[in-house]
Image (tube, rainbow, N blue to C red; front, side):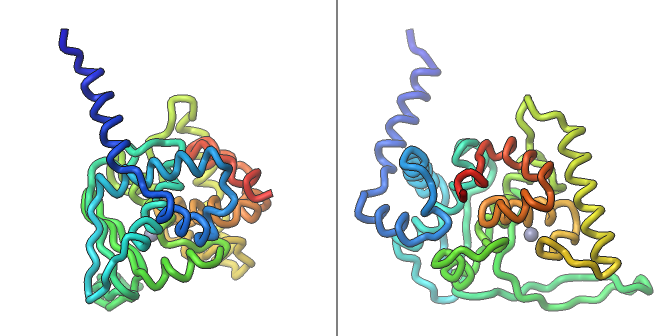
Length: 259
Ligand SMILES: [Zn+2]
């Protein structure tokens, strides 16, 4: 009898085999990206598989004259897959395209001033995620943050955290949680930390994380994800409960990896 689950299982295996990244290319990437240096051997094997699948399922387009080499594409895909190392490729369902600019790109933004008047301004961005649409990145920022670990800063982590957040609708700081994670605990923990950050900034107090996190709950989630992967010690020291929630969601203990 024809078995549909076996058909998909075989299709998955075929895709996995065909998407395998040659070791010489993988070796260059894994040894040159600071963020991936402290993964265990088993994690590196899993990351290589996921990275191959990512490249097979997503499209990367270089614009404004940038030519994307294979190593550049693997570098982007490998860092993107670090977030889903224990979540699986399905967490990036619902969109296909990545657009890579050579440097920062300009966008027009509307903002409302204190008098309620709407203005338009041009902003320079290094990354942007569209709901169900493309994810846009600047290669300049990627290159800089790949070469050395910059605590709290990684545009790939930031933008892909938005993509995870958008998996269950509009970005609001809450991606689809696992069945063993009570929504009330996530909401209470992250809301309290977000409000405390905003209060501290209102009173010009020291902020332990990038003040951009205070913009809204979606940016808060993207910024704390950057800290979770690049500087878990800072996040854990100042907000241990937030760290625990991210550890449960990403199913990774980055603090242990860094120690
Ligand atoms: Zn953002």
